[in-house]
Image (cartoon, rainbow, N blue to C red; front, side, top):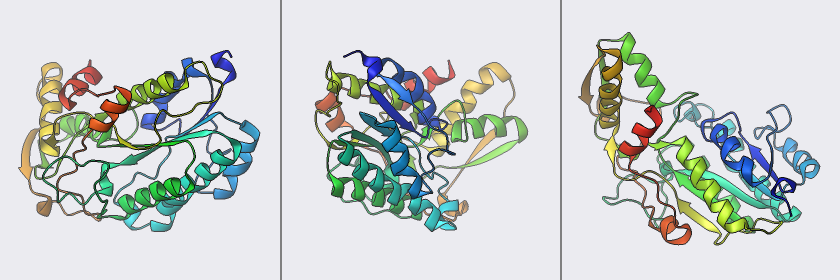
Length: 295
């Protein structure tokens, strides 16, 4: 079976991870990436017809409602996209004999643990975004079938809206940037998430027509080591100053000094041991990843 005869349905192809997935999935099969006019996860009725027409062997859902603060104002919209749609996708995938890969977040945890979170730790989200992502996870698990849920953290890329691009822009516009220094996590480059996903698919798919995961379940896939938003910003600005000269100065503040609509976990690092032991995949440290992205 030629790999181009395997159809992969990629949802959310214009997002940070989805954009990178278009490239990394291409060698593995025929990638079909419908626009929102064809498949809109906020409109649940659009899901089944699109999947029936596409008949994919594998569905990769990189679409999500990711506006963490805005979700507090639009809980129903966030729930439709993050919570209900994944369940419909999983159910339809199982009915059609397709496998399903879905992405989730470190924000399903409350941040009260002192060590990186394992897949076996109990989720306790602090905000609507985290709760809706957890609802989506639970819906997929309830359906069963051939699925993988990949949790990641602090995603950034070279396009779209993310912390890296925001810091690069504000560093030229302002004299001082006030950035939170008491929330810990692991920034993760979207390209590495896409490459890790492709590696998992490649080793699991082999020469078979249908994709069957080596081990269904939830796995953590984020960069290694930890930092704060301030530490992340400091590294970005230091690198920027090497080429742009003068940039804004950084001031460390507490989360209490920067109130937001949605509460964030104080510590949301993920333990990636299970993905390493199961698939042989381990993303580099966040510093190494950032240097690769900026290069």
